Length: 550
Picture 1 (cartoon, rainbow, N blue to C red):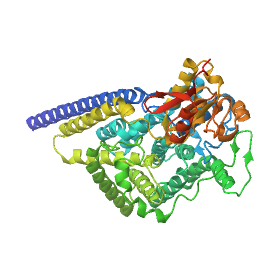
Picture 2: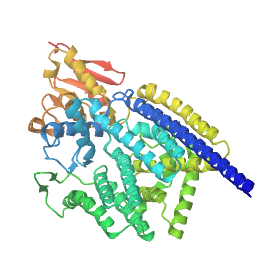
Picture 3: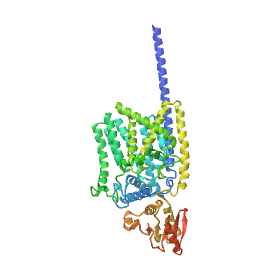
Picture 4: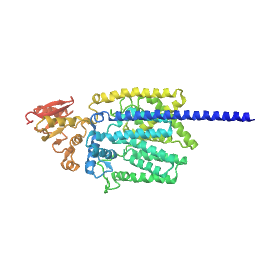
């Protein structure tokens, strides 16, 4: 009997030792796994910094016309508290008459105050929001899939063409992607923790997101309606949580609601010590209609390839690389299955929010007039999330998970190297001049000032007959910014001011200098009048009269 007891004790002791050994091995494996993931995240961070900051001020080449308008408004806000039309802290910018969302300009004004008025200050907010998308995309991945797949998600956001291109220049609407992704994470976290404060933070974040792009006025209400219906269906939200979410959202949305009312003629402009709600020269409403659906049948193809403007995507690479397409389609199916199961079983699944985001954006795009890639930028988070979701599923089902991961990294690494070689080293010269981008005007004005005696003292006429010189006055203000008060006091017809004339007069100014692009009739007239010209970049001509340089 005593012998049997000793045996039992020995067996139990061996069992304890074995279990302890297994636990130690398991903990050691987990530490090793976490170390690998940490190294991978560090590498992603380094690659992100390099891909976003390398040649930041020269790729894309020049400034987009809306980027330039935003930049000068940001200069005015940073130094005078108004936009270029002297509107005090506008809720929405006037830009060239039809308006522009204001948040990017306010962010750029901070960088201008810190590092001065230079192209890096205009583009760094885009870089920062690109980093926000990587960070919060990874965090959403951590909440909805395995750690390894979340790291892959962060890597895809870092390496895919659309994400690189959109986070390197100052287009206001591109902020929507980063802010929507961040807001989505705060909502997921609020539901997980069931704390009133987290719901308030999520509501405030969605409120700020409204200031990124006007399309959000349609997207966010629809997204939040279906998301909160889903939460109520699954009993994952309480009245106090809903109230905590709605209050900051409503406070932040109110100025924009008033802005819409003012511009639809229901209210007069509103002036307060904190902000101004003014009336635009013309208000772009009515861009959504069911009649647009037939024209938008190729929406998905366009979003994955390229659109009519070359700065949004290159057809040889696609927006997410073409190897992503089958995984994207698989991820859409997997997400849909999970969403349907979640709704039928009334079992909460955080990835459902990403699915709702995707279907709402696609539905809104279908009824939008002339949707394009930058207008639809928020859809690229669901896109890349679905690709990662497919990888998450495959790594669970396929053997040799480590080799599958290595294969994914290698394939996207090759794609990135091909894309990076083209984007950084060939694109700036191959696609030049690029529609709506301009750097030549500033350079030509520098040349006139340096090479022509008294050149900047004479009237300078600029040909405005082509998209490549759209709104030329804004580039002169980027070159040498005036205070908004001085510019408004001096500007006249066609926004001409000082010695700058942004039109070609019918009567030739004998002492003037003409910067010409495509107005053949005017160029022939100048030649007949005895003007000589020099070519610039093989595209432009600078005309001047001999004997007028002294």
